Image (cartoon, rainbow, N blue to C red; front, side):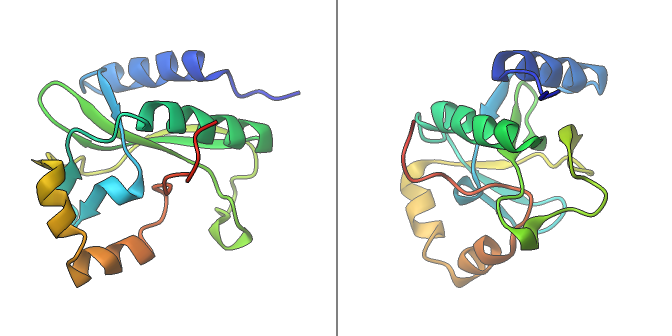
Length: 149
């Protein structure tokens, strides 16, 4: 039996978790490609993120739920919204010690206030070697699936 709730219930739990921690409960979804974390307190976010992110996040959640492992993480926050992602370990090298079942709700500490960059500027950011290096090593923020369900 899968003890992970469906996406809508999980989202409600995540919003409640955010509110309990005194963060906004409005969520925008991102994937690793939409984030560049330069330091613990300096984060750039592509904003607005691609429209398909909402449906793709649900696809990732469904895949993780089928495997019995899912992590919903707040990666940044503005005054009125939280930037979040859904992740699960897809490959053996991504497995997390002492986590083999269930759903985790988490908030990156410290939760940075992001610099929101428009898509045209994001295209330039993606050309930077530092951004490309971050993309190779950033764990726990899932990459965008290539096809929506």
